[in-house]
Image 1 (tube, rainbow, N blue to C red):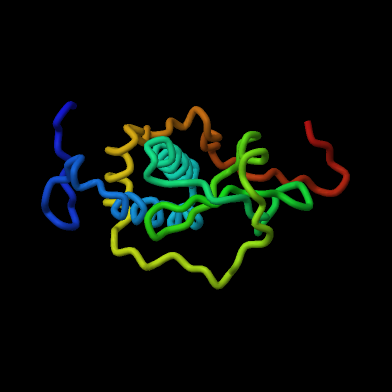
Image 2: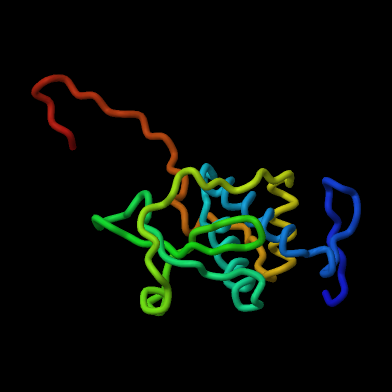
Length: 164
């Protein structure tokens, strides 16, 4: 699909590679990240965010600033996340081993720092990031998920009777 244009449903004009500015990409990552926090299955959205930020860092359009203590550590007392600056937006991504060596630790997250508001829909943000990274959302087959079981009526026996 070289040279293919993706239609932006919100603004009714095709997205091309030149319209993918740092600010547009940062807004799209922000929207995807915000929706991933409440999505029923956020895996794809978080993968899209992480791969987009990784590519932005590799291209020099975003930079790693330092490490922050995580607000919600998983199984440990403390966990750190990498703070990434892209345009006017700040994001957190999981750290690598080299991040602990190369980046300064900034301590606790400052709750007064906020990202600016973004005015993209989730669909548009996903379209932008998918065209930027080349990642597509594949329809999940129910092979991974538990198959629906048919309802089986409970069997009640009288007191003293055995189940056979």
